[in-house]
View 1 (cartoon, rainbow, N blue to C red):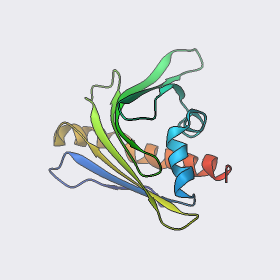
View 2 (cartoon, rainbow, N blue to C red; view 1 turned 45 degrees about the horizontal axis):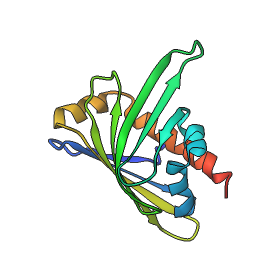
View 3 (cartoon, rainbow, N blue to C red; view 1 turned 30 degrees about the vertical axis):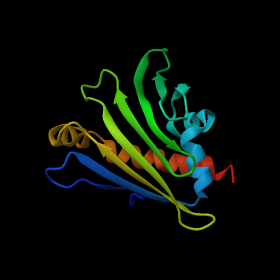
View 4 (cartoon, rainbow, N blue to C red; view 1 turned 120 degrees about the horizontal axis):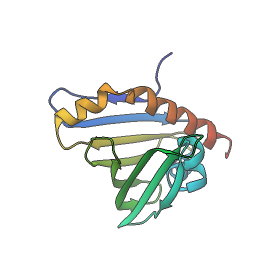
Amino acid sequence: MERKTKIIAEDGRQDLLITREFDLPVELLFKAYTQPEIVEQWMGTKVLKLENKNHGSYRFETSNQEGNVVFSANGAIHEFKPNQKIVRTFEMENAGFGAQLEVLTFEKLTDSTSKLNMQSIYQSAAQRDEMLKLPFAQGINWAHNRLQEVAGKLK
């Protein structure tokens, strides 16, 4: 099955370019990244904090059935332009990767379709390459499929 989320990883670079077109108006796509109750549904994680503003911050956490935390991520929001752009850091705790910088741009294609462009910048090309050894591509494609499904029901 073809992955709808595209990942471009050029040799020797320390960034990834990730794109995905959605059958969602740009306002709804943006909302899926900024409304805690929607984020929780498509990411399958608990939103402990989500301050959608310049100089805001966020924190996500996922626990297993026994209540043990198995995933924790946090970051600072550096730029927040509604329906257009989010610039933030992203750090997975206890994962051995440093923080990365993410630039998310939200593009209106038509009244009912939009495109997400993400640039993830790692501290080094080696660190980025280590991330790509994980099931990263499958995971982000799965998450974006869930985003489409969850947000599509809100149309």
